[in-house]
Length: 89
Image: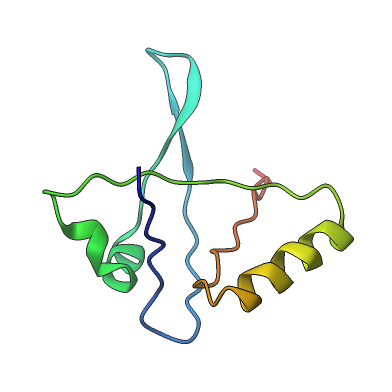
């Protein structure tokens, strides 16, 4: 399988969203993409193509910096930064 990493159109986009819990599957398995994400990554709107995602967690800052240097060296589009935020009720 050949991977093509797609990048955003603008300089910076900040989007807040929610994780959804599936009662029937009893799992946190749904991550809905907001319209702003689809507007930035227009290729995701193409229903003929298949898309997947790749999540990478770095255990420390040193390994993250090493990965960022590799991304810069290989001229790969920058990854999306995502934080999980616990909301207070």
